[in-house]
Length: 555
Image (cartoon, rainbow, N blue to C red; front, side, top):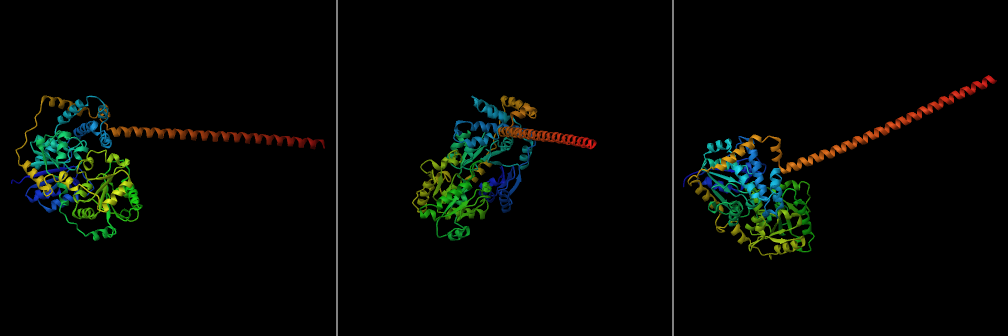
């Protein structure tokens, strides 16, 4: 086996939590791995990679350098976000409005208009050719020359307007081997289209293999099915505490079974899941079924939505516990909660898959307020459909309570094992995914270098168009066309707010002038009355004096 160097690049360091086992195994086999991130975060990723680097001198960490030319980067981002939105404008996403809306927010106004035109396919082809015509970034080229990796591994690569495409294209222009590690179960359906294909695409299962081919146009021979390496640490794992120890530590009564509610990363603007959890817990407490009303309830918040709980007061007797499981203590806490729970409830989260690995009854509610987060996503259907569907579904709280009663009594059947074998470990329940993942990387890193991407006459023509855009990027008309749709709405709303404010100011000014005019009129009226009164007094005084003088002269 030849020792190789891997350059593993993620958007931020927390992405490496799904690959820490892979990094350790690569280091144990003598390979060098440089972990690099493009931006910072506050979810514990930095501490994770520092632990990996401290555990092996073969693991180093760093950051992707900033772009050498921000104007080219801005142009590329506008083009890629336009292409992403055009993808989501297709009928496939008619039932996924939130995914489409998320892309729309970042899309230039020109692409929003073009999405309504017939023949959109030709526009997509032109934009894609224009994106490919943009020159590689000098900073990315220099960085790759310094790193000299045998393999460039990227994740997630398919974010909206993905900046990782710059690194991929620089690597391909240098004839470096490249690979994509699919990060999560939803990335091939809910993220951007993979418009430039690496040499290898590592997927979890045959479902993702089909998604890569059908949705992203990846050649079948470039795909390797490894299994879901990010779940390996949950298999054959013993709990760190007995059930009694865990319950007492969590504030639960060990004499009763408990239900674990796992929260989700809902779309922005969704109803508060914290408020729903309170309503759900109160409904369980009021149940006439003693197993349900007497069961303990443990709520695990989602790390990205902790703010929802700042002002939330849970019903009495409901435990609240959890954090980001990216270190050993956090994973032990999380696994113990899954292992000792009598049932797991959630809306749409990978925690339901982890509950299947631990083989617990899995339940969900399909409620109208959360439809866009469940039926409005493509990946959620994998938990609902087919002969090995995971979830027991209810459409109202009363039906859910009856299912939960059956789960607590051990009467609820499940297909967890079949689902896990198909979706998580397609090579067999006893075949961990991490060794297969590492083997695929080693094979790719030692394969012959790829051919240099060719350039046609059309590419040179599109390059001239890109240069023209570059030259005109700061002109008002181009800036207007490339302004993001959300910013257009924001600026329109801002203009409307300013106009409303100006109307209020004008109204207040008019009212103030009216009050001042009325006050001045009252003052003038008062002065007139005072002058009339003074005149009358003076006249009376004159008349009185005159009358007094006449009487004196007569006497």
